[in-house]
Image (tube, rainbow, N blue to C red; front, side, top):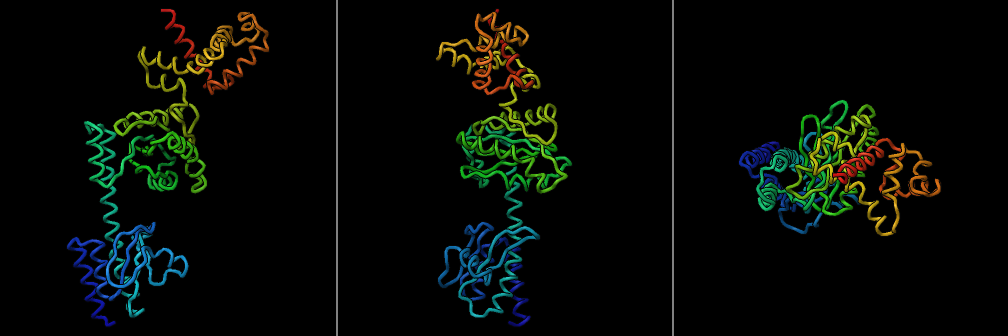
Length: 373
């Protein structure tokens, strides 16, 4: 191939890019120039474009993995791998290699530009959702679809910070740790904190998100020993309820840092009394908190005709003295010990933990105030 032909081919690539033809038009230009088939796929081997004549596989992945890259070339933009450009049925290997490399370079620029633009449009949606700009779920879904987002029915928010601040590294870690097949991950910046909105249509999705978040500090320390991640996991909410989950996640992050120190991920629904004390509460919220904390004991007592709730209250009232509680209950102290173990198991709160004890003490105090009215 003559230098003049290479210049003309390159000029044609530049004209296509300048006119907004995009990756598909560039792929077609390469196919016409080589007289073969050309296949463009993203970095995960998903189809982006195909052009030209002759037989082509649905994906070049099997060929590359079995025979090496050959006439399949990585499409990159700097260090970022964006896709694969593959040629099939071309006549001249030397010519193919030159034109393939030139086209892949221009396509890399186009895909990078599209990725940045699309990411910006997507981030605008999450920002609008978090600031409650949508009047109903239908409007939110319509806007999401227009921005190439497939929204999930429900989400759980995770708020994360690094020490020292490293937003780029944090985004990279998040992309590796959170996965979902039921909707798109949402990302939004809140000051130095990164909000991650994880699809949670099922209970197992929320559980998996919480587990993944709890492992982030260890994951970060393995990748960068000097980076510490702190985080908070919010509540599971519907699409329009995402702002509530985000607020809960940010509160859990702040509470967790104060109570447990940095390098810990705290879940809002496991913080017991702390959100109440951190955020403040009216009478209705106080009553709801007490009712929720004591509900497992009340259900058990009703079903088994036991006195676990009364045992807990008398145990606290007697200064956590088992002998005093046993006397008030008219039972042996071993019975009180057994009941306390039951209480810990049923409420999932350890009476030896000052944090869990605070939650149960506060619930009992609120309930007794309420019942005395």
